[in-house]
Amino acid sequence: MSLTAEKLAQAAGLMNEADFDVWLTFVRETSAGSDPVLPLILDGSLTWISALIVTKTTKIAVVGNYDADAFIASGEWDLVVPYVQGIREPLLDILEAHVPAGGKIGINYSTSDDKADGITYGMQQVLASYLVGTRFEQALVSAEKLVQALRGVKSSTEVSRMRNAIAETVAIFGHVPTWVSLGSSERELSDRIQGWMEDRKFGYAWSKSGNPIVNFGPDSMVGHGVPSPNIKLAEGQVLHIDLGLIVDDYASDLQRCWFIGETVPSDVTDALSAVNAAISAAASVLRPGALGVDVDAAARASISASGYDVYQHAVGHQVGRVAHDGGGILGPAWERYGTTPYQPVRAGQVYTLELGVNPPGRGYIGIEEMVLVTDDGIEWLSDRQLHMPTIPPI
Image 1: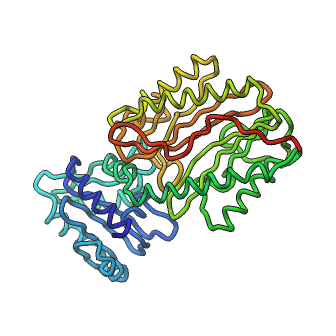
Image 2 (image 1 turned 60 degrees about the vertical axis):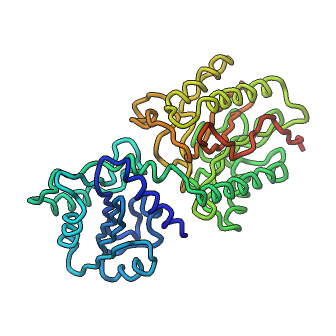
Image 3 (image 1 turned 90 degrees about the vertical axis):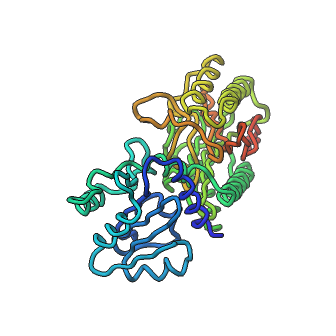
């Protein structure tokens, strides 16, 4: 079974818990990008306005006549309805047949989650215009929860692909000590990593300009900065990397650190221990039904108790087709996160657990792991960095 067939079957199953009767993904030509959910349910592209519809029992594609043959050939759609002059009438016919009296139509919009906010304003206006004067005029509701569950709860195929992306990321980390020396610049190491990725045709889990994030010592850019050609590696510093690959359409997102010197000093080991204790505290709370805000609170309490400044971001986010893959987050109740910290965790989701501290004069000590939520807790997908490796100052 193809991955899109797996996800379409999953979507039909998720309709059993939805508060609407049909799920409608409504898009126009996709050559310049489209709804983020589309690659989960369609292996291909679209040229005309298209309506991809899922109910509990049926998967229907209303598409331009030149796109229809590919849908039929895939065998993944129960009904393919081609049109030539306009989609309005065939779409209304399908809705008439599948939406009961007083029923609802779920479409892809969200005020908190960019990955569930796929319908453009223009397409929503087009759809609304089609429904004027019909019994569906007030039927549109958000499909946010279904999209988040479909994107977040991974199939075995998706998890396997993510394990491979993690393994390739770890392999790159293994080369780092041989790729740097005293006087190397952040940009030189970034270029070396990107060259390795591109030779193997790996993709970037976020924008290439800042992937990997490379930090040498205390003068490096904070957070989502770009590697500098002017910041050079020196003895006594911490080298930190945040790297995310895309391998076979699925992402990794990991952070690792090294100390430049023969022996790791106590302030660095203490900081790493505090970071890992906070990650462990979050992991102890992370299980199905937990709220992201509570997972984050456990990590905040731990790092604060260790005497370090509290991090200024969520302790974790979902990973999937990209590093920041939408859905619920493991974060605080801040305005910028909207409702996402209050979404219950589900088995099958993949999250990061990440935070860091800045011991004076050393640089950023940040660790990021990836975990799979299981029925009763988590599985570590990445081997944890519990100790600080050294790079001899040569």
